[in-house]
Length: 141
Image (tube, rainbow, N blue to C red; front, side, top):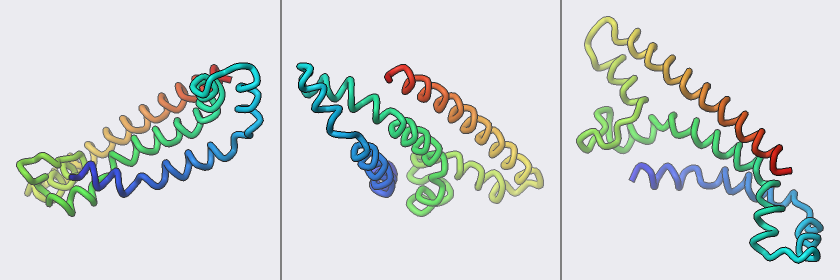
């Protein structure tokens, strides 16, 4: 259920980006591909998809980052323990339990260390994905 609610909550933003990217592609490109004898699939694969690559990259990276920040939704649906039986447990809930429910003095420090590790992972993955997707988009044109 958490996946369905999260997908429904965020489906509008990618649709908006893809719609804007599709609207920015001139019709002349598809017409030229058809004149050259390309099928609909070939026109999409060799003309439209390369022009959509920046939007696909943006949506992919923002979705990746956004899915790590799903604490509020999971907390509202399953509580701080990740109910039922820890099935909805995410890193944000682990930070929360470590910082505020562990009962120890070191809870805030451990939670901060977890947050820094998560930041390093997300930042590194996002930079690597952005570089790869930019290189891929340049190779398509």
